[in-house]
Length: 421
Image 1 (spheres, rainbow, N blue to C red):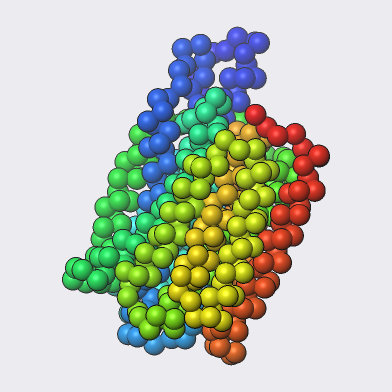
Image 2 (cartoon, one colour):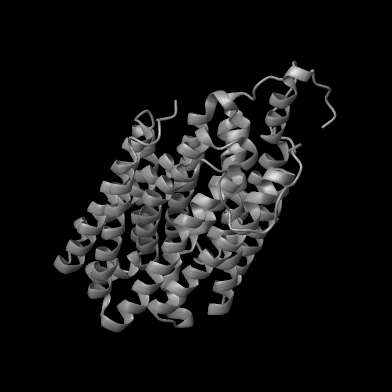
């Protein structure tokens, strides 16, 4: 940037430039509609993240693979995502949001092509890997871009929209895939053609997005485990303590939910599977709007309670063969992820400097997605060995324990950190 600054305003101006916000005496905040539009690339990529969920039953029948292999395919998504998070947050903070988002959207387009033409487990793995890399970029750079566009006076709105963009897209993907695969020709193709059109509009939004390249000089390694500045560790810990069990619960529903529905209902309807996933993430979206004005630690505590109840319901559902209880478990899981995610993002938005925000977002998601990758995969292979009912029960007990611990961590921290305004 080449703007001249007076000495008293120099530090403030550089911080604003690092955040990608307009700086200088003539600067004005972006209109509110741009804050909403800045969240669209996050939604578009997250639609892809779960669009394949209702289609795996078809691929299992056509290609032939076990529930364990299915969870491995899901796990490569986590591998790509975690690998992306090691780089994307730091690169975004140093080179700018667009530098990360545009290649990520291109990779998402490539994943659509591979999904649409997949005829082997290897192709599904590659498509999921590319999807994970793209998602890793948008949860760090994309969510930070929403905050940049919002500016310092709309951080609460930025956290809400960034978080809701993620969960709403994650739910819309499987619903879209389920409906299209049942009602139009090319059940494993059409949804990805539609998704490519959505991604194209996201690319246009990023190209026009009012963010600037950071002015701060690069420091430290480019590839590293993402973290937060000194003094922000507790905020990160609180977010992970609740977000991790919540997103692990929804990951289980996405990976093995269709199998559970098949066993309980005797149906392989892709619309039913997609609708359950959509309802789960619609709950995650709605609950965030409902609780957005509550204290952040109250939101996190409620998220931990919701995930705990979700696991109680899951264990009950598989032992009683109750579809309504299984759906209740999915809705509670969505609420748990939604509140954990909103609480964690909001704490980071209000405490981490703008020039480290994408890396902080990446750190939150690393903490969440590691168990979200490992535990459902373990549950998948355990289900192959001891049966789906017993495997789901073990998973429920383990995750319920983690959710309770997360809630206790939040309660224990109430007197140690002041609630941000």
